[in-house]
Length: 74
Picture 1 (tube, rainbow, N blue to C red):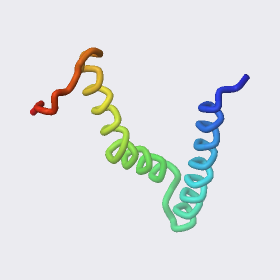
Picture 2 (tube, one colour):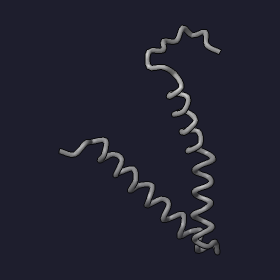
Picture 3 (tube, rainbow, N blue to C red):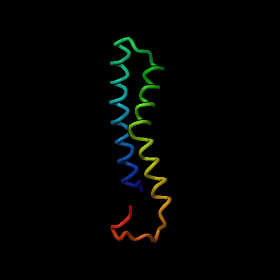
Picture 4 (cartoon, one colour):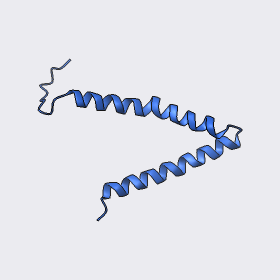
């Protein structure tokens, strides 16, 4: 039996693939080359989202599993 989360991930990947393909075609039509487009997508994704996700993962990993907030941290 397939996991519904896997199905949702596949659906999301398909949507993103469709949108990125359209963007790449549009940019190629505007005179940009594929390598520059792919590198720009990678840089923007990293800077705007992936770096933040990684920072949040590191922060969560640094907190013990039995930590309970009293609201006075920081």
